[in-house]
Image (cartoon, rainbow, N blue to C red; front, side, top):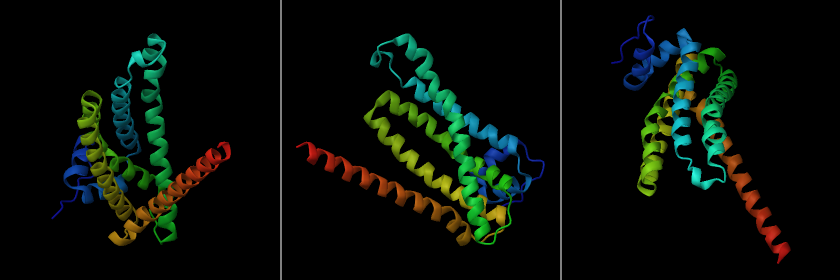
Length: 207
């Protein structure tokens, strides 16, 4: 049985709790709404991911090695945290709207905090991303499998965050998370099909 998390639980204890006792930890996070900690989780993980991605850039692939070592390598490090924060904020907004439509009463700050901590498992992708850089095919295969597992793990944690923020059943919380994801996947597939059709039509027009 899960133990109730202490209201004075520290940052590291909360991070560990997300891994070992996710339901009660998400209950604590969504009630306390530690926005500062939420930003810290997102920024630290995305910075680490950006550093690994920057290390994957090879100067020999560009005409100006000095430019690569400066501007290009800085892009994932600088842009990564901004995109990560924007992504969490976007999904928090979508889930908040969906929750309201299904009768929820949780706040946006509560959902944002929960989803930020749901992002925590991505820390486990960092060493495998580094392996993908070093060992190419084998490393990329391992990185892909780990990335898929972490994505599923994050979705499950997001369901817990929605559930605890709104007092929903697991099924209703899953609907809040999965319906927008399914719609986005369908739209992405439609855009891909449309792109392929346009490319085929253009090639036929040139022939």
